[in-house]
Image (cartoon, rainbow, N blue to C red; front, side, top):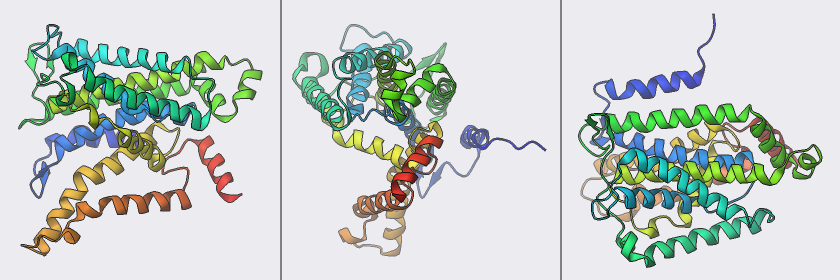
Length: 346
């Protein structure tokens, strides 16, 4: 009897979830919109995984492309600006615009390696953040752009995930996530995917074997930035605003890197798992545990009995234990598993 792949089982569960009665919320916390948020961050993690996990290029500026996608969407859709082209064209423009920005950043910096590349990409993210604040006539400065309208599909105007019926937006983001996974899985088995793996393992050896490393790395940056721009568009649509430029800071890039560390570097499913573990812990488990503690100790205002105040401590401990006992992550790529276990045992 042929076994059903586990990834198809997980997809079936996610598709069926909105139709199962009785599990729409836990302790009054709606789960559907929270899971939709995790889908968005999973797309963002997949973009960084192409650059860091598959190509081995250490960059800390993924938050900048996330912001570019969100602000392109805001500029092209809000009513106070003249464009108002709608969600679908804004989604395409955000993806392409962020990809172009990724190429423009990568082209003069690809000669850098390791920490130097990380510093340049981090600097780009910081410069972009303050640029968005200063061009107030376009971006509305530190206040951001709003309201970003919900998407529409043919004659159906889709309710955003924050409304009573979240299912339209939920399935839209899930569909885009599945499409991205399908594209990246096929890319892994393609000539481009093998070239990215070769560059990650040994760039000099890849060059000796005839791999044109510069174009391949530019493509990796473009794909990673484009997926981050797509995630930014979806996030702005989900929140109905672009958010303040300061919300796209260094911590966003670090959290997404942690998705890959926990889930597994170089593996598409590992990146998604990391997003579910870390983001799910932050937006689903922590509020539930807060309510459990408050129910157990009613009326107390002590900061020591609020789980949210302790979540970063538990998160840091989990990262330390993961790096000590399983540095390759939960679901790493095969090459990363062998490489990191060899380093850990040395």
